[in-house]
Length: 258
Image (tube, rainbow, N blue to C red; front, side):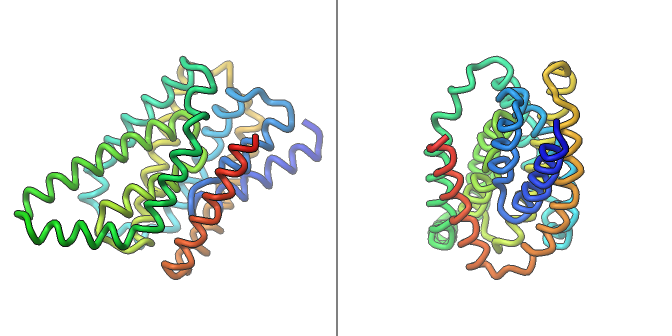
């Protein structure tokens, strides 16, 4: 890489780490930059996933206060993200690139609808609980959330772009909690997905990793995660929700127009 390209990839890592901590679509910054400096798509995807792990760590750390009291949820959903990431990594290494990319815009549209209608869905779930036994509705909520988290984990292990938006849409619709606490949970679960996928790539696709690109993104995303979490935690719920929607629309536009 030239000096200009090195700086571009490093800054893209900072931006991706910050956006991932607040919303979750940082790959839409880093992936095109990696392609523009001549890195093949699959190599770029794998290197990017490895590079974003430090940013996920710093973003999760920045949201540690909002994670307090969610230990039970974390223990329930971590296996879903773990298994989903392994599935997605396997798909990336064994299926054509076009297989999932063709459905990404549809998934993003669905996620944005879930984010926008989150409060109404939560209200409907609350009314449903009132009409049913708490234990029965609780089991259904856990099962639905587990399945949704697993599916987003599959997507995240395969491509990663905007998985945070998808996960906020799923979790925010099924769990009754503030958007900031949902976002904190999202950061932790995406960390699990990114770290698991990165480990799988290192073990079985070491020769397909561009370590220079991964290292630059790692350094940038580590700083970006701290910046993003510091900003994101201060955003009121309506502003955070609007930010998610705007970046989601931009993500759809970039993917469709690619």
